[in-house]
Image 1 (cartoon, one colour):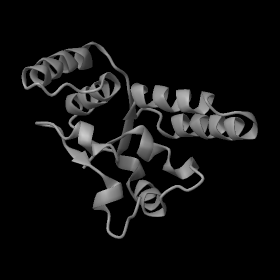
Image 2: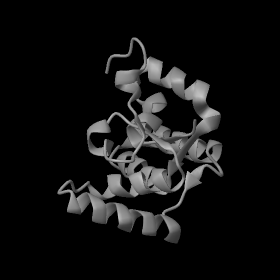
Image 3: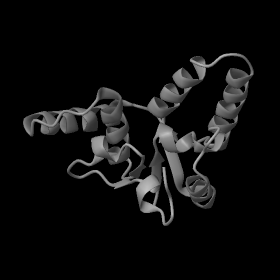
Length: 143
């Protein structure tokens, strides 16, 4: 199985109180993990909200993470844009709109047939989306 990491999961290793079980899962699954430019943007914004040494440490971590994920960060391109448009139309017809950034991440996962790995499973549990919440679904994990 291949995974698309959401920001809350990808950032666990750098958090002060990162979830040990989730970090270990990331280490085991690292070769099957992907993410999106939208997630990188969310994390880059989060880094910019910090100051001083914390910000410097997070910037270095983000650069290393992007390097490690080289070739496994999907852009929001034309093909994904069409998947997003179809998905948005269906969700709105069902009166279940999705936050825009999450909808971009979902379209990326759908386009590349990936399972979304997130603690925010409420927003992603939609028809046709595969979701794994490691904070709830890994044995012995407490958030």
